[in-house]
Structure formats: C-alpha cells, structure tokens
Length: 135
Image 1 (tube, rainbow, N blue to C red):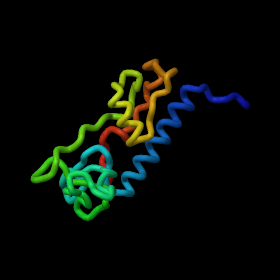
Image 2 (image 1 turned 180 degrees about the vertical axis):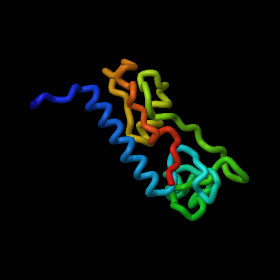
Image 3 (image 1 turned 135 degrees about the vertical axis):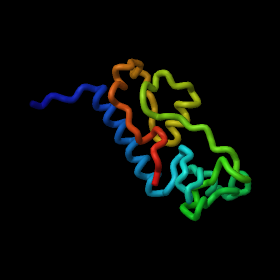
Image 4 (image 1 turned 60 degrees about the vertical axis):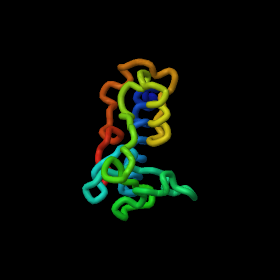
C-alpha cells in the first residue's frame, strides 16, 4: 500500500541486523568479546590488541588454542582475568556510559538519543549479543 514502516520498528530491526552481522563475524573468527569456553574448552575472548605491533601483556594468551590471532585465553592459569562485558540488547537508555561504549565498540550498537522508551525495546532482544557461544 506504499506506507512506510514506523521509525521505531525500522530502527529496532536495523539494530538487530547490525548485531547479527557482528555475531556472524565473531563466529567466523572463532571467539567473541564475551569470554566463552570455545578455545579447546577453555575461556577466551576476542582481543584486537593481540594484533598490535607490541601486543598487550606481551601477547600472553593470544592465538588461544590456535584458533585465531585475536582470540586470547583468560581466567585461568597464568592468563589475565577475563574482561568485563555487557549485554548489548534491551533498553539502552538505561546503560551507563561504559556499557554504551563497549556495545558500540564490539557490536556497533548505540542508543539514539530519541530512543528513551522501554516500549521501543520490548521484544527486540537478540541472544546474539548476550554471551551466546561464538563457535
């Protein structure tokens, strides 16, 4: 009938698409920003600092289980503690600045200023950015 979809559902769908695209990328890599036991059964996470000319912490834990140069072991043995992570679904208007920055950096999700209503986020949660296994 030529009518355009209301702004909120279009934006909500776009956010889902953005998150789904990042989740697919992390699955292809073999690890995600959320620490998971996917590196030979041990915890690891996506850490782009492993690719730095001088990797953080001397590169300890990078190439976790030989999966990828950006997968780093964490939370056991000589490895550093696993990093804090955030759920990037749900009502973003309530996120602290650190939470917003993490979701923007790792999943490309940000909260537009005009999206301050919980109704916008009802039924929009995706398991994609909530710690779902990457591999």
